[in-house]
Image 1 (cartoon, rainbow, N blue to C red):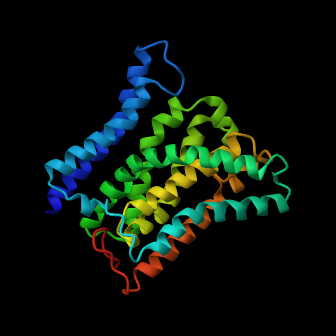
Image 2: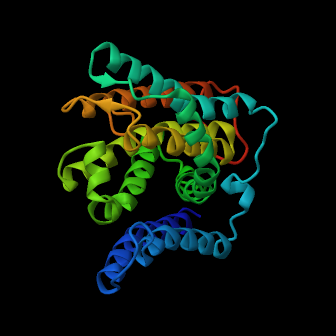
Image 3: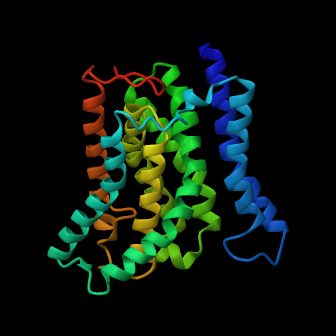
Length: 284
């Protein structure tokens, strides 16, 4: 059983790594493409999902094992947490930054921002069904099957999640957006971003495991995408030069540490022995 699981993980990770660079290669030979909608980006986004679906079907993995059942009963607290975690941490960090005079909130119009957030939420939710199926539904569930230590699962999921984004950070991401988030070289930006995703992985993995369902993770990821990036990229919040690495809601050290703390808090609940999810793995 373990050899079969390991084989599926290796094939999946290879496809994840290959997809983005195949996309970069395609874009290098296909010219005249609109920014942000290139064939290469389509390959990068779609190929890992096609690989995961093929592996699920070929390995006869049940969709309930992946976590597709919502499991609302008994999980309402986790659904509530999923939509509150990113707003709560983001608000706390921005208020801390404003108190330290590192963050300027004068351009933040709550009404306009809320409308922008709501208008993008459905699109991010649909997109994150695909992404969470990869990192939590498929990869995390396979790693749990191997009875790995929790911190090994966090590191592997976070690293593979980050490595998948590497072609995006190094090639696909427009330079202006990258500089707005963190004004450094592409290589350093990618390094910080991957480290951030490894921190976030603790929280996403634990939410998935404690709920035994993908859907709280999909909701949390959708809220993050609709909330965090627009704050910076749309100019609602301005961060003092040199302080982005500390308090940026996208790649800041302080929010990353808080997300690790949230994840470890969920793990503490899961491993008390009073709550054992049916499909997403058991605490140790």
